[in-house]
Amino acid sequence: MVIDGFISTIAALLATEICSAARDYLIAAHDSFEIEHRLMLDWMERAPLLKLDLHQGEGTGEAMAMQPINDAAGVLDEMATFAEAGVAGKDEPVQTQARNT
Image 1 (tube, rainbow, N blue to C red):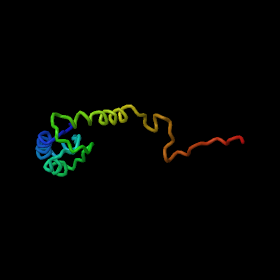
Image 2 (cartoon, one colour):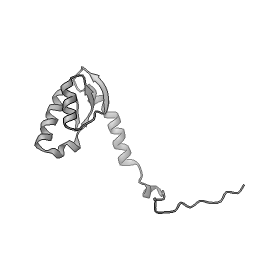
Image 3 (cartoon, helix red, strand yellow):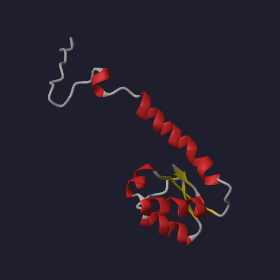
Image 4 (cartoon, rainbow, N blue to C red):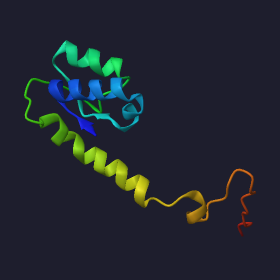
């Protein structure tokens, strides 16, 4: 869940107090102007994705955070593992060919 701003952060804080495992599923979109918002993020041990000091509301920080979140999810979902890409592991010697000079 992407949390954005003061009110949604209160809801997220309550959720983590009810079920501490919920913390692992929270992404803080941004660091709001309100000091209380920063204190709640600290309490939940969540670092904001963006440092914006927004005064807005209306989900502005969340909207701005969605592109990097989607990009990161795409990398995790679509990037090949070393094994899939045929990259040698640390236990496998890398075979090199002698260059003709």
